Length: 514
Ligand SMILES: Cc1cc2nc3c(=O)[nH]c(=O)nc-3n(C[C@H](O)[C@H](O)[C@H](O)COP(=O)(O)OP(=O)(O)OC[C@H]3O[C@@H](n4cnc5c(N)ncnc54)[C@H](O)[C@@H]3O)c2cc1C
Picture 1 (tube, helix red, strand yellow):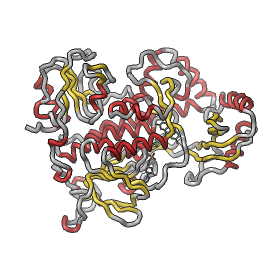
Picture 2 (cartoon, helix red, strand yellow):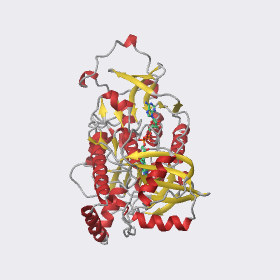
Picture 3 (tube, helix red, strand yellow):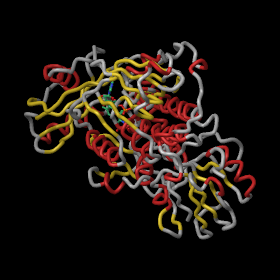
Picture 4 (cartoon, helix red, strand yellow):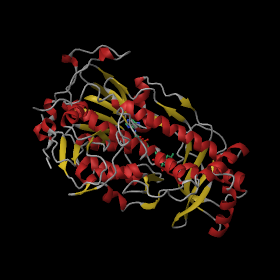
């Protein structure tokens, strides 16, 4: 296997990035003269060290990009909500050698029951070596991703809120809340649903505001578990946004619809929980001693653009939707995985002209689809007779394995096919983690490089060997001659013709080095 390192390329200090001008970007101020600007201390500044920001930082570091992550909070979040990592995210972790580190912190569950919480077994033979859900506390996955980014060389500064920025032909000047100014070639807003970066950028965030809110927290109860179980089972028949589940050591996870839509900057009180429990269940279960309490809404919005010049958006900063199906964090991490190598290529100077714009072209439709499926799921949770009838019908349809599979592949993101043009069905899809002669395919992708998996043993990656590895393996279990994988594991080319391959190497990896 050819495996040259990126060290063959220029260091980040003498970046050979292809330039574009802010004059191309509508509505932005003309640049100040070079002499007035602070030096470019970083290649990329990331606002926000949630899962999206941390994943992006790590992906950029794989390519020796100088990254600074600015996180406004000084401490990890106090609430410990369990999130589900779906199949595609688990595959991404495996592709970067992170999965073993993460698995021990979570609990594996079957890949089923995701769509509108309709209880059905997992479809048969899901096409993945990692076909399960991993439930893991969000603060733990955030810490593991941040540690990973730091180990790879990212700088992370806590207690630093991005308050403003200005972009010009060469970079972005970022202003912190305390007035400090920092400068980088690019800024990426991974700063969550209320993104300061998105607002300052003036990017529209159309969609629907919250119509319902839900209270969520952890607290102790004052009645026996059997009493709770019986009541919860009864109420859950009609109120699907309601549960009390034991969380260990006498603590219960409590989820109950809120009375109305409020100013969500304010956390709920214990009295709010007691009142809502009494309204829904006729008893407050004697809840007391809360560990934490929060609320979430069902607003559904999608940023109109993911990029304006040198500033990009990813994760919740670009899209929000209700948590049903557990897709938000997964979507953000997958945005980061899509963007990382493209932005790195831009900075390292080998990106083809339109590569960076494929980030929006590929990820915006994926987010739009997630928003739509959560809208549909929310309707199916309604206690109204019409949605209940639709739910019963869908429940019957999901007995057809193909229907069940379609929905699970959608939620777990393994059904995504990017539009790379006409070609076999595999083109544009991710390739599963198959056996290859050196072990597992995903183990060969840890460094975030492209990979030619060559079953013909007569192809070459030629002048792209500084960006793309070559594995000649006639035994690889594939029903096509050879595939070219992008660093995010999506199939960028299928065939056996060297000239055709060279064209596709140029399309995704730019000009050959020699
Ligand atoms: C009840 C509930 C359950 C959920 N369950 C799941 C699930 O099972 N699976 C799933 O995939 N998703 C789930 N989600 C969604 C998931 O929590 C979010 O989608 C995810 O946290 C988004 O990650 P992010 O990094 O994009 O944004 P965030 O997690 O919001 O991180 C943004 C970061 O930016 C920081 N920040 C904000 N402003 C600034 C600034 N100006 N400067 C610097 N830093 C800033 C914030 O402090 C924060 O650390 C759930 C959500 C809720 C409410």
